[in-house]
Image (cartoon, rainbow, N blue to C red; front, side, top):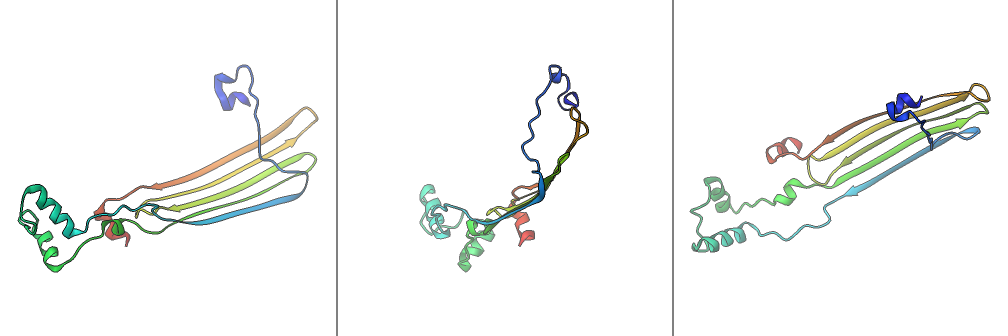
Length: 173
């Protein structure tokens, strides 16, 4: 009833509009799937490690090759010529997948529609992923000319895994 769906706001009645239902005849089966690759659309030009050291020294008024302000690990990496490309370290080629499947049909007295969908979106930022699965259905029947009954159901499960900190990235590789 409208009271079950809308509570006290249904006192004057509610018009329910159902958009998906079956057509009389053979059942209609639909499947839709898509896969897309996701990547960062713009990567600004960053300084490399040597240019960063020059910038810091220029701001501090130090000699261009002064490393006295660096931590021991930074100094060791500088001496070995090792640099970290942080953009490459935290990004990846992402994949977006979306699939849906439904079956609908009807007879002169019964109408039905059942569907399911699945989304799995891996972002270009490592550790950022979104998954959702849904199932829905609708069955209605005409009991008499003036009386009909039906059942609608929807279920959705979502898992939204956000970004992670740098320490967790090692576990993802």
